[in-house]
Figure 1 (tube, helix red, strand yellow):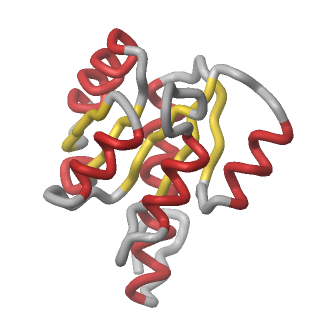
Figure 2 (figure 1 turned 180 degrees about the vertical axis):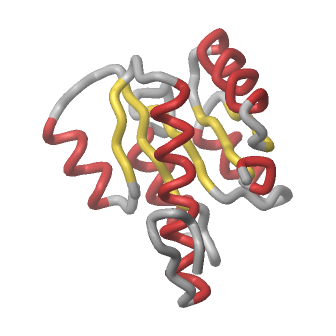
Length: 138
């Protein structure tokens, strides 16, 4: 099922971005990467993406602004904010700008993959009006 989910990782940390891209690819996701919000928005003009995983703190356009811009697109991908800086205010900001989930670094790849599946299914259900049970069947 993951092979049909297209994920964009937006994070300024090269090593983290490359490792996460590799680990999610091994789980069957189609994964793209961008080093900042501006590059993510440019990539989203040419690629269809289902879920964006966005770092909160990045130089230039931060995660909140990146998610806000993504959510203004027609048929926007779901967004998960992934940050190494735990702060209730940031979580609230993330949800207000349209993020579907908020995760703290470090998290396991399994946990992130589960969240990606969850927001993908939730978004698909909202767009199609088709709801699945807990076992993934309509």
